[in-house]
Length: 149
Image 1 (cartoon, rainbow, N blue to C red):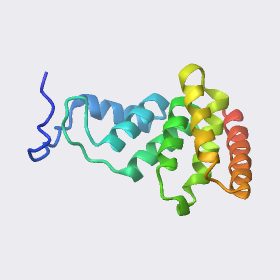
Image 2 (image 1 turned 90 degrees about the vertical axis):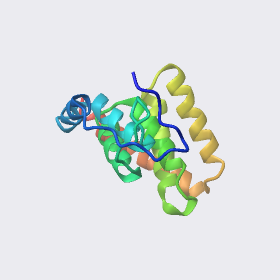
Image 3 (image 1 turned 180 degrees about the vertical axis):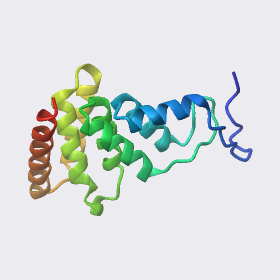
């Protein structure tokens, strides 16, 4: 097993392993867990061995949106967290609130608690109108997810 890259050294690009190719194939075929994993990997830009891999926020959002849309609560939570980290004026704060609400309604245990806490933390920074928009979007998302079961 390889040691993680030295932070002071130039990043090492990971070889395109059979595992990564298989994960991408599964994600492209609609596997929500694979989509989630690719989203997380794209966001972190490191694989399990500390190798730098290509990826960016847009790529992470793309995969997480697919996984969240396929009903995976942990993807809904991660997506909310990414949106919540966006600049306040970007409009992503309303999307963050909506996905926190969706995740809180669908997740269990620690994920449900994290989603509820994420929404509470975000809601104090939103105007009443933006909170209303987040709730409306959450209801529309929940209805769409409910129709896919």
